[in-house]
Length: 452
Image (cartoon, rainbow, N blue to C red; front, top):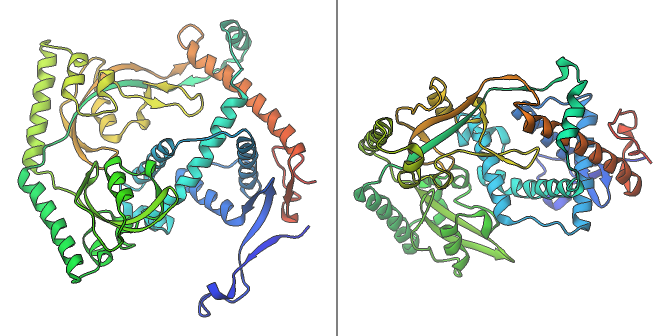
């Protein structure tokens, strides 16, 4: 069986860099009508290295098979007309980017250097990846939606389980927060807006191009390197206020009015519209939070904490009225996370899964105690001030049916779901066209039947 090289066309090749006709990529597998490229495997290998993923067996075989299995689920999801929303995709894209930024100490420049791409391109590529991932996840959920586990199933499963096989439940905490964003002074807001008005005037007079000003002054490093260009984006992937203006632009020669988003202030210029997507360039300027504003906000939060300690009111009562964090204020300040394996939302965190500043603040607290106020950068890149309460702490221990029934139920449920999924893949391989080149014929795959 032959490999399927992708060959550069002569009109796309610079003679001093790549020889005409040289192979730049290779189709190594085909699953249904989906091709798997060698570059896909290398990209997943790089991402795994960044995130500390340990591949079982030979990565040269494990990684392409994992991609192939995902293609099977995607193939079925398309057949079943499974859809995902732009808003859900956009949210997961930002979560992934924030996770990567945390791994490189919050530096966009380091992330771009590691990925060899500007942040705007990283975000654009992630949108397709996350869309496929969500389709696959929904497909899996549909396949196991009828599986249920009873208390009797849980007790029966763990009755004869060896002690060394009983799951260990790591230390988990529940945390409540009250967050306040330091106020920007009117003078600082006017300074930023005046700068943006000056840039607009310079573009309109022809003194400088929008691209040049974006490279020099925009505080969005990823797009600044590309002259402010964001790439084609759907409405759901953009900040709502930004999207409203961007999608209403009609003249590529004009610059938009000043737009305030959760990231700062922008001016925008249209590049093109294509279907339900738009490509624009922008210049972002962020107002600077003064030390005085931070100190004032910290003092105000410390005063609130003192009043709670004095029992003038409770943390639960204060959070909805005093916090400006839209993710937690309606739940009395209680933080929560989405559990990827089960699809459930949980308020219990392992310490390493909390934002570092919050984990540090609650690490030495006793249950019920409230931290001193501290500042941090939130997921939207803004400086905020926070007080945190340790609502509960469960020390790490071997799971018991009495105390950890939900944990054990999830173990049994996950086992049955995995068995269902595994059998589905085995059956699907038999019915879907697959083809892979001879380099993989000696691989020891998890599933049989790839070679036909």
